[in-house]
Length: 640
Image 1 (cartoon, rainbow, N blue to C red):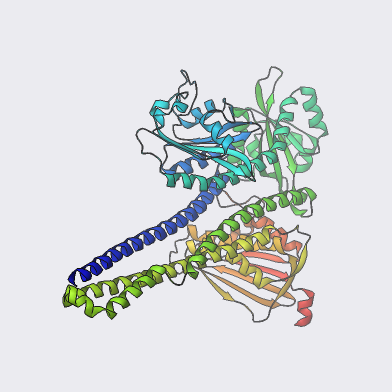
Image 2 (image 1 turned 90 degrees about the horizontal axis):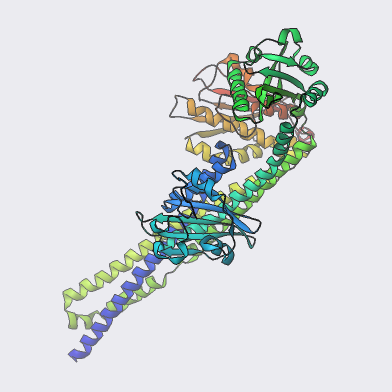
């Protein structure tokens, strides 16, 4: 009899041991899956942030791709990364980070910096199927090679003996190869793990977005390149004189000392100054501000020093004020090909800035909106997939492991007397208590994870809502598409789009809205641009303010004789009241760089809808107020 009970006990102990091992394995798997999902979301968000920042800062495509490669290397803890683009039927290096060793026949070429390595790699054309990189491009299969310095496939490379491990993944879009990403660690770094390969595969889809955007940028810049080539060819004095005399734009010629040596008739008409007043004077004598004079000096220096065309927006000083122009500055060559100064072309864009129905600008806007909508759509799909995964875990109400443990606890309690006979009272009680604690701990952990998944699901849902708003406005039409809108709802959408910026700066929004709904007749996309810019300016004004606590923006609306008056009041930096009108001048800014539309464009949009906009402040550190007035829609006035 004793042998039977001992056998039962051993079987139970083995079952408990196996159950515990199964529970641990399940916990580890769930924890790893949750960690992977969080890593992927963080990788995607961080990558898009890094790329968008570099897209605003850098001056050329090379820096965008180099910055992308640098971020991937940092994320993977890789010593070097190279991004290859597909061009026709071969691969070509386009971006690099670190000391990338996969270089063939380097010879005596000294490679001490990534830009020199990239310059050398660009001379190579890797055919599909050729070597490690070409093989990945042809098979479309990811590759991870450990102990790469002993791999015969790598012996053709200049620094193969120093390579420890490498991995490469293809970038495939709609079934077509876009390029290849290769990451390498040398002997002084550890080998790559399969998890790093998976992260590289995940982030490759974001790199495809970068390459697609760059392709759009290249196409968009093709027109500028053609104009540059045309300017380089038109060097002869006869052609310059013909262009100079027949041009509908204002033109002037400067020598290397920045003295005005020639102007055309149109320049006299634009400025209101005569040739006698202009020729022989320095160009900066006719700048509207010291800052503009310095900016113009930099552009002229770049045009002369780098022998290239420089184009910028500028206020041209006139006899009675100033006018907005696009200024193109090109080198001026003599008959021997030596640069003797610059030629500047001033194109008056006053009418163009006010002509919102311009076909060219509408086409450009639609192209940008389509690109943004496509990107938002892809991001939305990724977010939806993540949300679906969370919902799956949330709906998993019962865990088989928890049920099994609960049944085991009931069995032990029901058969406690039998166990007492075998194990004794004290051991039996402790054993039952241990099972109860395990059951309680598992239930607690299940509830905790369910709560975490609910919160994450809520966050993903919020992101999806914001992306839906962004897609709605990105898909908006031209400024001619007016419709009856609820102004309060538009402001709510604008606040939702700026939520991250407001939360990051610890800014609270307070409303004072009328109970009745106020309608306005306006173009939805253009008006949301104005509201976004006003909120963005109010939020950014706290960046230079001394106020660190109690930051708030108050938004109110009221009806006043057929118009709705909206006030946006902040308690941030404020400004000198005497400079208020300067903010509405074209090109005026207090920031090093800007994005979106400015107050000049905001006023033009509001006035085109029959409204007004004002900017007020009591002084520095006393906050600012924006007063926006728009006509109420006829249907709304009839109802009131």
